Image 1 (cartoon, rainbow, N blue to C red):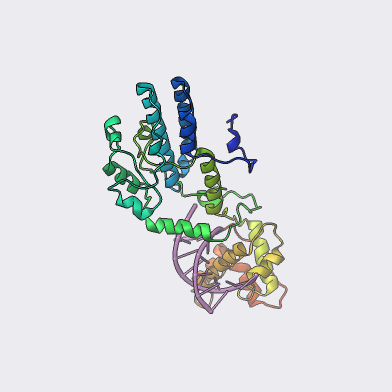
Image 2 (cartoon, rainbow, N blue to C red):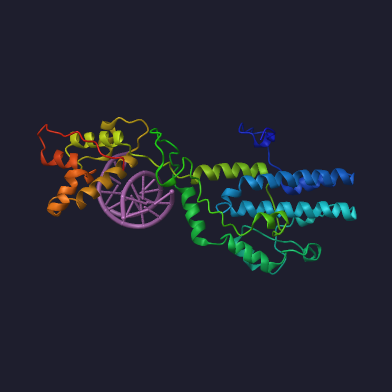
Length: 329
DNA sequence: TCTGGAATAT
DNA sequence: GATATTCCAG
């Protein structure tokens, strides 16, 4: 943690331009000493693996990043092994061509990942370098799920949401955390053992970790779900008081309620949501439709939503208010 | 822009 | 199932 590469530091410098793996290989190819070359490759592999660990929790949301990282790691490892065993120059062309070689109609359709690893891969590494495994793996990470992609795009297109604007400091309900960037489904198709063994799909890789970090950060920011607002009793009390001042839940509007509540960080959306729920409860427990028993429930304590507003509306003009804040909800 | 209602997420 | 968030239409 202490040794964060300069490209990964938070103080983004415009002078930094992420390298492509092609340029990296060019760089490596200039190194004459085989051990130096291998060392450089291994170092890079370690960085990639570290990067992969970072996004591991979000792999379901970032399948492409995972694949790209996998591809790069495998390619680099192979290159490293080749350097050691045959003492030959890296084959740059493997990473340069952008067109598919053959038999991969799938990649043409998605237009995102292009795998062009050569047949020899299956000879070199006896693991999952065949198309069948590749397809299985890709489908297992839901890479080609159209609905999913659409939902992601939709989120990316939608206006930026407020992030973590809650000021109440309540414990979140339902296990929600302060930062819920993604659905952290860890049932990713590739487990750590597979990954460590290099059982991944070889292919093309265009970005280096720093760029991935930036993408990841941006993606994280844009897909993060707003922190769940906890309506504490005190907050709900203010809400109800505002309702009463405005003449009841049916005439009060979110904006006015929020202004009357005077709570820092409280948004119209939150008030609106609370109001919606409030009205819903009120409708459900409305005296006009509820049985006497239900009314009793309302009066006796389950009336978290009813009591004040009910009084407020039924006794409009009257100043009698039983200030019995209820909640939290 | 604001609002209500509904869908969706937690 | 309850509650909060997000989306959508008016």
